[in-house]
Length: 97
Image (cartoon, rainbow, N blue to C red; front, side):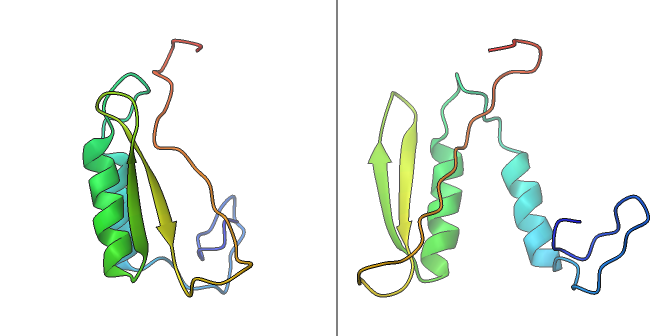
């Protein structure tokens, strides 16, 4: 169970299923070619636009050629908070690296 109301191996949840807009966003995100050797700027732009629309302070940090990192801040500029860290690239299938 992943907290979204999905049924896995016969287990059910009372939590609501993801809305169509969430599923649409996830479909958009996984459609990007994000192998570690390819640029990620289009994906970063999508994330940045969606986050800004949700009220985030957005900072795109240029990295290697054709790649960037994204810093987002939600809420007031105050001590404390929560850091969420992730990455946008995957290792090509079958490469083992």
